[in-house]
Length: 406
Ligand code: FAD
Image 1 (cartoon, rainbow, N blue to C red):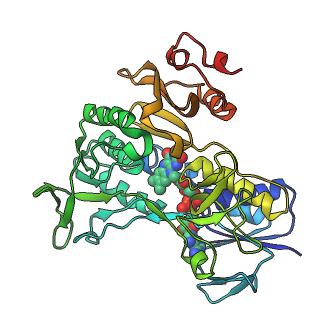
Image 2 (spheres, rainbow, N blue to C red):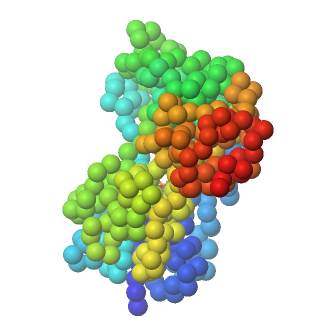
Image 3 (cartoon, rainbow, N blue to C red):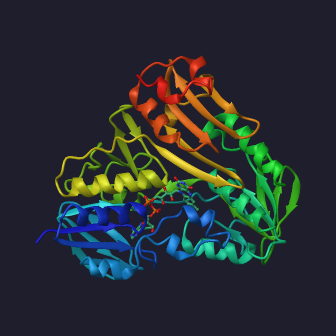
C-alpha cells in the first residue's frame, strides 16, 4: 500500500491532506508536525484572534478527529529531523524512521531573528504560532500597554492595528523610509502610513534599532540614540523559509526549496509547497516564493495532485489580503514586475476607496483593491490576459473594468 508523508502543520499541509482524499486516494497518509496543534492557518493570529473576536475554531482547519475519521495518521508535537531521499525515509525526533513512497515538505517559515542585544529578554515577542499569539494577546487584551514594534511589514502593521483597537499605545520603528514599501511600493506604503497615523500609531521611519533595553524584562528599545519606553516589544522583520531539513538532505535550496511548476524538488518523489517552496512560475518564467495564505492553499492542492501522479501546475497569480482598522484590501500580482513607475490609481486615494493597478509596458501586472469589493476577479483576469490596456481608461472609474477585457 502506498504511503504518503507530509511534513508540516500549516495550511499547505492541511490543504494537501484534504486534496489527497478529495482526489480519491485511499492509501496511507501520515502528517508530522512539530507543533502541538492539528494543521492551522495563521492570518487570524494578527487580526481577529489577537483581538479576541475569533477563537481557535477560526484558526484550526479540522479538529484532530477529522484526521482519524479520514484515515490520516496525524503526529503532532513531533519534528522530522532528517530526510534520506535515497532510502526514501524520514527520521523523527522520537527516533522513529518512517518510510515513504512520496513526501511533501510543507515546513513553512520562521520569524527572522534580529541579532541585537536584548532580543531574548522576556517581554520580547515574535508572531508566527498560535502559542505566540496567545502570549501576545495576554499582554495586550486589557489595553493600556506600551507596545513597540520593530519592523513595519504586514505582520507589524496588522499587530499595530489590533493593539490600537484594543486600546494600547503603539510605536513602530522602521528602518526604511516608507512602511510596506518593499511589498507595495512607496506610494501605497504612504497610504498605509496615513492610515496608521490617523489611528494614533506613532510610526517612526528611517530609524536604526540599536538594542532592546532591560535587565529582567524589556523596558524599551534604543533607536537613533533615544530610548522608546516599552512594556512589550514585537520583532516583525520578516520570515525565513524552514529549509534545514532539505538542505541537509542535499536538495537544491535558494531562498526556499527550489521546485518546478509541479512542485517537484530535484529529489525523486519529494515535493515542496507553501512558504518554503521557491517554485518555478510558468507564466513569468522565473522562480517565485510567496509567503501568503492563498499560495499555501493552492500549492498544497497542486502538490497533493503531483504526489498522486496527476498532472498539475502551480501557475496562479500571487494573491494576498490584509485587514487593518477599517481598511480591507486584496492584492494580486507578480511582485517582481510591479513598480511605481507604472502605477495607475482608479478611484479615491484620499478616501482609501480605490483600485491601484501596476502596469508594465501597458499590461496590468498587479492590482490592489482597497475598500472596493467584487473587483478582485476582474483584476486577476486583466493580469492573466496579458493584453495592453489604455492607462486613461484604466484610471477612469466611469469605464467599467470588465469592458477593458477584450
Ligand atoms: P506554515 O504555516 O509556516 O506551517 C509550517 C508548519 O510546519 C509549522 O507548523 C512548523 O512548525 C512545521 N514544521 C516546520 N519544520 C518541521 C519539521 N522539521 N518537522 C515537523 N514540522 C515542521 N497571508 C495572507 O495572505 N494574508 C494574511 O492576512 C496573512 N496574515 C498572517 C498573519 C500572521 C501572524 C502570519 C504568521 C502569517 C500570515 N500570513 C498571511 C501568511 C500565511 O499565514 C503563510 O503564508 C502560511 O501560513 C504558509 O503556510 P505553510 O503551510 O506553508 O507554512
